[in-house]
Length: 367
Image (cartoon, rainbow, N blue to C red; front, side):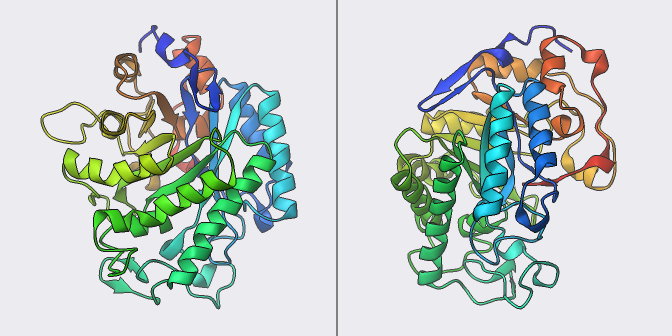
């Protein structure tokens, strides 16, 4: 493993966000917040990662104010008096430890199983009622429902700002609600919310605009997106750089400050005839800062972890080299930080012999 990791520990500043280094904790759902309320143990969990040297923490998915936004009563909410008091304490603890923190704003959409979620009498919601391509289990969202959901995301961002968070991330990846609009496989609408690439992106564009209008010009907005879906690991929103630019340009114009580009393995090229990964292409096409993520520090991807397989550590030489070249700006670390809150400091101090192997038994669900 390389000893030259200086690029990871250079400060980062963009608009209203200033970080001490380039390491971001990727969101990982843990279901440790009964009744949607993050308590002292959640504050301690995030504080330990800040003390361990992580510059930016992006929380586990936090659900907006919609009764069918969540899949579990133990997933934290980003609305209501008690949950927001809990988040204020989380923010205070992370800031005291020298870190910055954003919540991930989440609606699970059709990924929710009504039989095991709160309000089981209510159906899950999605652009076309499709849980996966060809499998319709609910009625499509109405235009009025879509407008209410956009407002729900904006109000969640307002609450996050009031609680002292350093920005927000919109969850637009992995086959959840926003991504269900993006993906033609789950969006068969023929109105202004479906059909063309631009129309399928409109839901996210309107969320971004609403958040920007409800907060302020310098309040950082991050958008997490992915080509792959939990319903189909091989799915792709864009098969060429031209199509990717068509997808990304309206989102960038709407006000995204940073794109968080979720992949299985960060070292894999996104398109033929180029070594750039998804974050690299996104930065090239939009000019916006990007976060790369996908098995950082580990040799196995998360699908093996779902089966309980362990992942030995992986050198970060190529990661640092890519960062130095400016392919991307920040590095999202998931399972390595889940297992070892001191991961960032150990990398900085060259304590590679102390790096822990990731155990599949400790898996948190991807947010």
